[in-house]
Image (cartoon, rainbow, N blue to C red):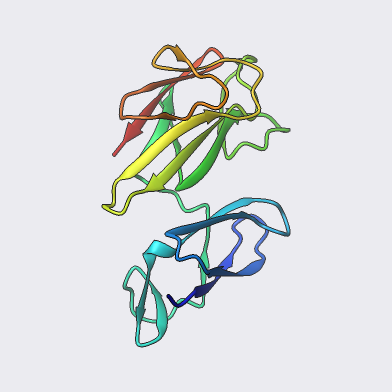
Amino acid sequence: MIPQTINIKCPSCGVILSVTNSKNEDEKRFACPKCGKRLVVPFYRLKHEDGETQLDGKSGSQATQMCGDEIQQSCYLECKGQKYELSIGGNIIGRKADTSAADVQIETVDMFMSREHAVVNVRRLPNGGLKVDVTNHKNKNSTKINGILLQDGDAIVLHDGDTVELGKTKLTFHTN
């Protein structure tokens, strides 16, 4: 195994980071050392031809690629007609507020939805499909999946059409 090293640019603060895939992972997850933004580097998308690192088979070397925030059109949450796209990795879901640090901020006046309520983890499987699960995060209020209360420590796999209730706000999970 030869470790892969690529340079990525943090989409939040713009710092260039050198990331090495020393354990041959499909993706590497970490926090940006400058701003703390949670990043995901997808190594499964890299291909090597003649010693050059290329992204998705495109010709020409990619010295630096954007990381972590690229939107995946493969799954999203919907609330009152509004779509909230989910990216590969951990997506912190919460109520939209000036003090919210959630990756996906839901526009609602529901004070029973915490500002950082749940985490929706999206992982790409070797066959190209997705595995998506939801866990509680920093919430003090209820989380329900299809009407069933989510307990701390639970990780419930989501399927197309499932209802996710954060506080009193109902969202529907969709895959494309």
